[in-house]
Length: 251
Image (cartoon, rainbow, N blue to C red):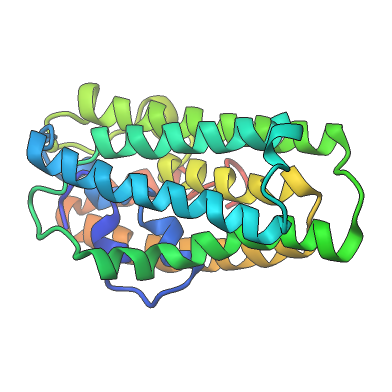
């Protein structure tokens, strides 16, 4: 369990939105439990190939939810969100080490990603077929800002662990983002996914996604923190007492 990503946790979960989120969220174990090594070039190419297929499927899911293919050219906030999300997934591949375990077979990866595709289809579907009209620009802009904030959390925390205080893998990181929450990468990923329904002003999709993501986060965090307690003992117990899981001063 001491890999540089939380993909190992999500592989053991059922196929639902929680696993899709956990697939590229941080695990406390993963981010702090091992010395970081850059993935091999061949592995990176294979993972980027899988990711390219997934991103094409995301565009297809959005088009399916919209019912029209030229919608994207008329909605810059949606295009911006998708570009940022694609950039996040590529950066996540580059910064995550899966070399300590077997690479998922493509069918398993796609089963895990399917709930994300449903999320990407559901928001535009809700707007197009339930409400009609255009999403208020202020709401779409808020969604984009939320996504950028989530990206900042994810990349910043990944860089901190790989190149900063957590690079030796033998201590509990308490500085930077980890000074305030124990799972900043997971928090960032959840924020990015929750932001998608805002691009379409889709409250039902947002509510369902938020509920599933929080349930998933709680389940994955319990598993991760049990392993961290077993590894670091009193040091990690002290850290738990001083910080919150995902949201400072809330949870």
